[in-house]
Amino acid sequence: METVAIDYAPRGVKFYYIYKALAHPENNGYIQPFTLEERLLHVQEAKRTLGSGIEWICDNMNNGLKATLGGAPNSEFIINPAGKIIRVRGWSNATSLRADLVSLVGKVSPATTVADLKMKPVVPKRPTATGVVSRIQINSVMRAVQVKPLESDEPYYVKLRVEVDESFMSEGLGMAYLGFHLDPLLHVHWNNLAAPIQFRVQCPVGIAMGPGAGRGPEIKVEVDGDPREFLVGVEWDASILPATRLADSPIIIEVDYFACHDDLGWCKPIRQQYEVRLLVDKNAGSVRGRGARGGRR
Amino acid sequence: MFIRHRFSLMALSLFWAFLLIDSMPILAQLGGRTGGRTGGRTGGTQFSQVTQLLNTALPTVNVFDAQGKPLSTASLRGCYTVLVFGCLT
Image 1 (tube, one colour):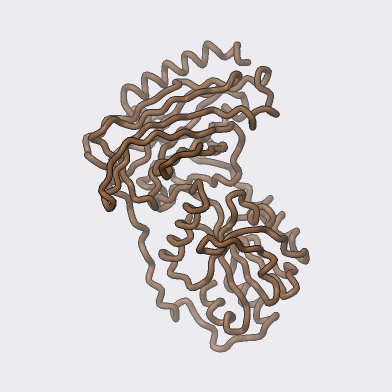
Image 2 (cartoon, chains in turn brown, blue):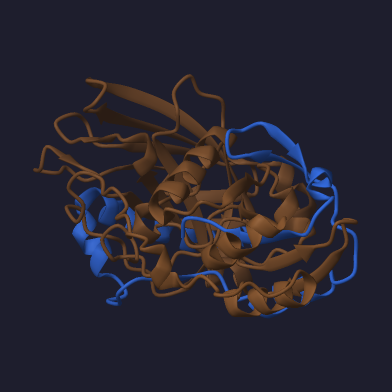
């Protein structure tokens, strides 16, 4: 799209990327932001790594724009001056977009090519020492469920992702994945000289999760940036807690961990809590290649 | 179902408690494959929903610019505008 924008912005066409929730968390180590401020950090990172001159719009945290425009991850729209959607594409295609603009605005010759841009790929910054802790291997289709962080004085340096397996989805009894992932854009790492991460689970009546507490492994390397992952059993009895009440009956997960920020020179214990609802989160994206260091590259 | 599975859940809990306490590498070996799959592909449905938007008015949604300032999609009228969804991954 960059080449099309260079040719058609001088003709009065405006171009925007719309930043939305991550389609594939863990790719290049990035994880789903919890707040608007964190989503804006992702926008800055996208601008930095793509080296694009195109402006960005950041979707709201309810994913309102994504929802109203069909929910596809890489869709493309042309809006006419009256505000009407006159071209739609489920997957962005620069060649087709250029053809559309030729018919709407006129031909630009010679057209800018990708080679003309001389864009240099920027490698995402990698967290400290990844590949230290073995990743959990999961042989099941997993679905992310809704996770909401409760108020905290500290940023969520570590972010919880919860997924449930096919068995739970079909039978109400199965496994849940609890993944505590360091946010690479907040530049912290684990302090393995301190106590490992610990979590405790508090379930509403009708839901059971076991074990109800867990503790991360002791790591011999002083610092690392790998996620701390757990698999727990989970059961939901719909006769006790009807599906209509799931939204009002969150599981509370409390976590304690030590985090260090080298640039700011601090290392401190942090306690944070999450509400987890056993409802599919359609905006959580899907993890590809879990188990590869730092996610898929 | 809760009562029916209570025993199985207890057994499951003990099993996983043992694994979690004992060592993470054991967990990592379970399944023996390289990475799980998450989510199903719903692209067809999404593309269909996108196509249905053709010749409709751009909905007014309150979003933000890259600096975090509020922005209404209504302000995008007045010229040809290209919108492309994307993210970091």
